[in-house]
Image (cartoon, rainbow, N blue to C red; front, side, top):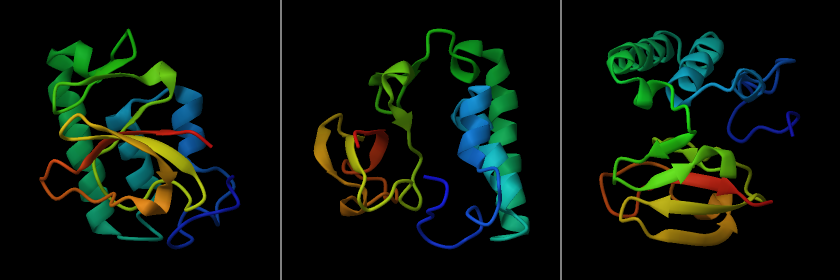
Length: 143
């Protein structure tokens, strides 16, 4: 899986992928994004990626007052629409951006309007956020 990257080579040219670090350490969404942006900044967006990492770090620090958000012991995550997902069941919170899976990956998604999307190839969804009911808030890779 690590020999394939959609959109660029800023991860694929390295031996250790950010998602391997995120998985190994069991990092949450904010921690994972901090790692991702710091690791790719030299090869992709420079200062902007470091600013994004800093933004996620600020959010992580701010949420330390509410440990249930920053470090969910139960691995239940509440999406911005109030819907809860179980991270142990394979659901991954999504904040918008480039498609995180390959075009041949089948995924199930949860939209902002709480409707679950049927399994479809990853490239078949609009992964960007536009502030509409159809924004993807979480996904689960099926195959």
